[in-house]
Amino acid sequence: MDRERTVAEIIRRMMEYNRQDPKRINHALKVYAYAKTLGLLEGLQEEGQLVLEAAAVLHDIGIHEAQRQYNSDAGRYQELEGPIVARKLLKDGILEEAVLDRVCYLIGHHHSYKKVDDAVFQMLVEADFMVNAEEMDMDKHARQTINQKYIRTETGKWMFHLLRKESVEEKK
Image 1: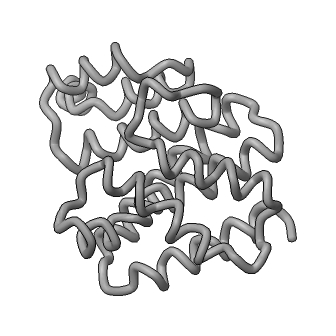
Image 2 (image 1 turned 180 degrees about the vertical axis):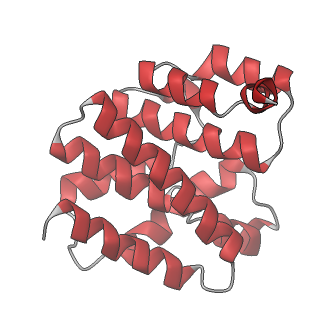
């Protein structure tokens, strides 16, 4: 199966898993869109692009289990439960084992910013921040802090700049 079809199937599974939670579905799809764009514009190789897209779709897949087990959706609980849920969703071999292992690693560390160890991980973090900044209606100071501390790729800097509220307000 090619990357596009594989990722489409992973999206289908994520949507089915989150069928009672359209907010989570929409968040995952937005992170996926930004991550896919980052990866393509930054020139990721095919396997890295697949890892990035699959991890982006499933990065928050542990939220419901975290809420059930810990009565919290805090990042550390998402990181604990996410890889377990992801492996269950992908247990049929849709991804090669090494790819699945890396996807699960990223899901299990996507709030652990000091553990970023490659471009794929970096792009996942950037895509999630782009979406969270908008969804959480972060103020200018919070966005500047994110930009300075966590946005590293050239494409990420460009995208994050264009997504600022200030850039919209400047046009008015």
